[in-house]
Image 1 (spheres, rainbow, N blue to C red):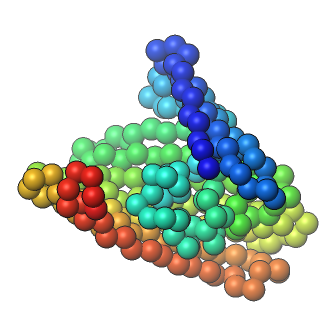
Image 2 (cartoon, one colour; image 1 turned 120 degrees about the vertical axis):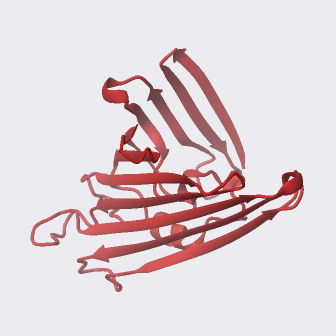
Length: 227
């Protein structure tokens, strides 16, 4: 597979990005738009907005493309919940920092996505998927830091079934992530990353109403080019 990335600043406050993938799979489409979105900074109240097709901000690994992962494939829990290459969908995203008296970095993100994407949701639903993500960062000392995040996603399993007493958004996907960095002498870095995901489903067609899973990743970069 070959990925072509195109980026262009429209003006000092906005940019267009597109990632187009070319592959040699015989049974699948040979050209695919993996991402294509417009980003706008300087919106009212300090918001940043995006519209188009992008990777959903759920946890850590789903945001990354395959070639930027520390592993060969996505974790099994991401493949099971969102598909072999994670969840990317058309929609709109708003992002901002939350002021607080403790001066802790708090980033909040809200997304409204097309509802016919991802293994956890209906492939035919016209109801949207709603996602929120909250991230914080803590500097333990000059050599160590910790990033914590939590995500909540709501969608429809099947457009023809009513769940939760008439609530069409009967699939709730919840997640939490924690990433620890330790910067050692001579450029060495230790990373310990964890994500856990679970679902709450009022399902008439799914065999498991509360699937869940997690992964843990330890990566030791012992030289600038090897880990």
